[in-house]
Length: 303
Length: 310
Image (cartoon, rainbow over all chains, first blue to last red; front, top):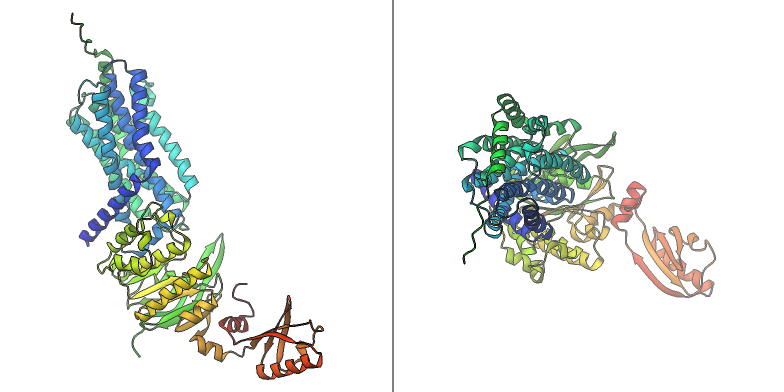
């Protein structure tokens, strides 16, 4: 039974990866657009080989990983609305393999994109060091799975593509602008910084930014990792429970509140971090450290 | 008599459609023997698809029992799905999935797997093996759906309106495929609102209307049990005066469809003799005459007072 579940998950994963590779829109949004942003931000905000290049890489990696959220929710709703899911329902495949394969396939696709971004930043944009690659790898792994699961939960509680797009847009905006992924968190007023600790994306963004700038050790990203891992488990289970195969199977209004259940781990971490205050202090200190870090002197002319 | 492979008893299913309760299936009962091609014939909204989807395990009945291969479709899960194949009325596949990939993908889910190369050949999809699903024509998509329904060598095949919306030539191709299934002794349950399909393909037909079976039997039995009239279509050299044909012996009904007179007669031989005499008397000539024996459509009209596609 368990071997069947694993075999079906792997079969579906391979097909999903193949389908994604044939989708030009996917390639544009997951590979070319983040690279475009990387070049743009480095050119505008990071002159020469300043430590800000690594910080920007952390932000770009965050956006790449968070993209899973949009991609998977839209894909699941499309599959449901066009009747693709009901064909799979006839086969001996459960909701678990359907959802797990989409998370796994997305991870397989995110890792090369992230690797390309790291390589381009190091070799093409002269990043000073490789950063903490292990910490980045772990955060990309758990982040990709967690944000995929958040996307699946949105798809599970929305009834139409239009509704999915609206909810996605609201959540995405909060993820993008309140997490520090675009504007560094330390630049926000303190009350926004406190509020940001309730948002899953904050743990991914700050974790990746400081892993990329080599300011965080593996043990120091443990909180980010645990928060995202718990979010992943809760979101996956909720989306599995609310999974619907049929386009006409509508979810009742009250079930939408289950989305909030996926945020429980982040509410708990948010309260703890706000009370303890260690995390925000650390973010502010690391940010100041980045500001005061000097870029290596340019090579002197040899005559 | 052996145990039926499909047994349905007192099935009920209703839906809430914007606050209005719609009873889709109202006490349906029938059984299908192994190797039989059984048809559910009825107009749109008769409850055929709901019934089939209950038998496929995709919907739960409100009341009644359904058993397929000795299993309860609602509860049996994976074991049940291994035994059935189906063509759904409304379904799709990812646009960028290739034909051969689709067959291999679905074959991988089952313990018993048909050779997908043979399926490609049998369903004339060899040339399209690398084509994306979105590039297939309607007929090719339907052939692929049929091939996918057979990837697990199923004991029972459900075909829900397998030729709906297809042009006549493609429809005939699908008929050939279903006839092959019959030769292979597969049990097939087919829903349709096409008379020709039911008459040509089914060993037995259940005529369904408003969620109930109103008559069940072989197409021949159903037609013979009907008190239906024979349809006689005639074309004449010159039009006749209104109402003359209605007075001929045995004629129950007569209509003029743009120069073709359609007579419904309970006594066809006498009607024809009377017609010839009438034409001689009027110095008119017969250009063509065709006779049609009672069809399942006539049976449906007789039982419900409506045409199948009303």
